[in-house]
Amino acid sequence: MDIQYRHEWKHEISFSDLLAIRQRLRAVAQADPHAIDGKYLIRSLYFDNLNDKALREKIDGVNLREKFRIRYYNGDLSLIHLEKKSKVSGLGTKFSAPLTAEEAQSIVDGHLDWMLDSGRPLVQELYCKMQFQGMRPKTIMDYTREPFIYGPGNVRVTFDYNIRTGLSCTDFLNWDCPTVPAPDSGIILEVKWDAFLPAIIRDAVQMPGRRVTAFSKYAQCRMYD
Image 1 (cartoon, helix red, strand yellow):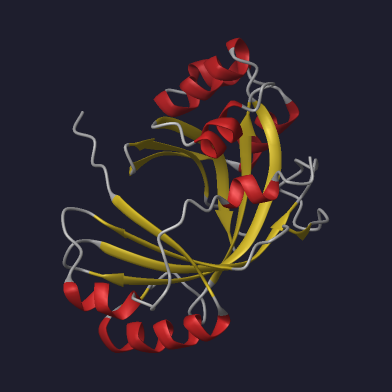
Image 2 (cartoon, rainbow, N blue to C red):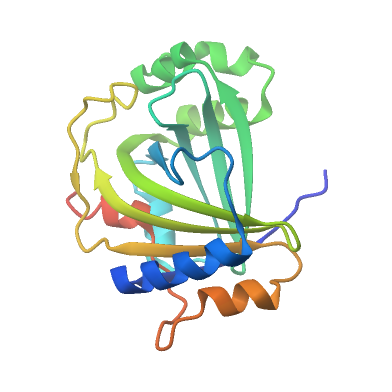
């Protein structure tokens, strides 16, 4: 299988930065057609093992790492995905498999036997890691995303903000599950692309004095632990 790794920049920006970059992007890029009024709400449930392997590897800057999550958008339980994000030397890739609401709830509840016969390799991989590595649901994360896309280079630019954590709550299909603001979380600009980043996008997202950062929304949502 040919794995496509993508480049990624992350910047912590101010609200005034967001206004300026958003205005420039609207002139050169397209809004994501799946967004509602230019944005959508994301809810994710992140997994980790008893030793917090994914969290520790992110904090320690381990070169080769991965994390699992289940995600849906705008409270729509008809389209739920299990995802695995992998990072190698700063390049990222993502694998995805669909889940029904019933399957997602079964994983949260620890009813796992069906996963091995699911016929979905990613679901089977999560089953093995839950059974033999102690991987378990850890925390809910909610946030708002504003996405833009640009065809050449397969570029995706997003603003993420209003990041909230469910603390120890993992009942992520329950939209009323209480969440609180993640500490020290502001506005995150993410830029992802394949082989090249077109100059028109590079110029649109540049802000003087802003540096690429290793900000992790997952790590911020675990800071209350």
